[in-house]
Length: 373
Image 1: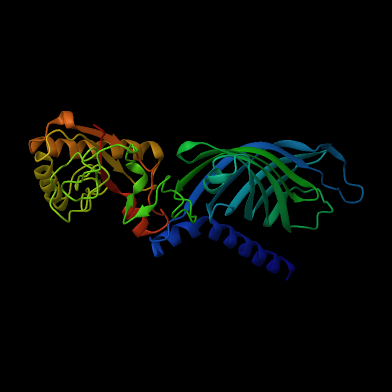
Image 2 (image 1 turned 45 degrees about the vertical axis):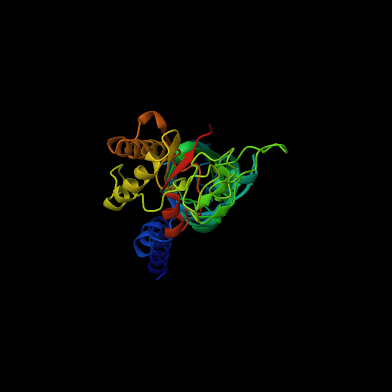
């Protein structure tokens, strides 16, 4: 009867471990509108084991060995993660007898309670972070030597430091106590995928306000001297002295340079994961090229931006290719290339949260910034 109960408990703990590993994949399949960041990791270290032999059993020969740990999980937000793990702590040496091997598996919750940089670095888990961990697990020992081990199923705890790099890589050092006689000091590499859920809406918009999808900090008009000519011939709200697109139609919506093709170009999108313009984007750019022909002295920076899904290096390259694609299209339509500067910013300048479909859609954008005279 005892063996049957033990087997059932073992199955329960193993199921919880697998659930911790598979939950991110299931969540993604059920609701793509709520991205998460999942990860895998593994490394090695030193296992510390101090079993207490029963009765006249031989004494300990060695209490430490080389061990390893494998795990996978998901970042729930900027402070909490959950993961399933398997660890082999190595063998405890017993005099004139079989060694006792230690293997543990279970689920853990991690709390990242301090970031040395603080501020936005904390929200993104950048740099050096301190964390604590706790969870439930199962400890298996393999040996013919009887011991006083009583806590097969246990609550474990620990903590450590994790150093985050770019592209989802980090280095984790930690100490975990699985039982009174079982500890693991380990160092491991971790690879993360996806987006870290947070409440970044509004915090990533740079120094400007988010007005209708346009970051107003991108274009800052130069201060106008008190004795400057404040004539506004075309009535677009931009003084003639700063207006690079004079004689715009009355009632046109213009940017700070007086041009109504500046700012976010609504409808300029690309095929999935490529720099190929959609048919709608070509139609929009046909209109932009016609407007630019009216102002042959205007120069613009063509800015392309992505959402945060994928590595930062990949997104930076993709955005640069997309900016060049827009420049190439306009050049074919007769706009002098010397008036166009292609610049990809990757995911570094979001104007909305990357935690929702709508936010990511707004972040995938092309902007025209009219350059100074």
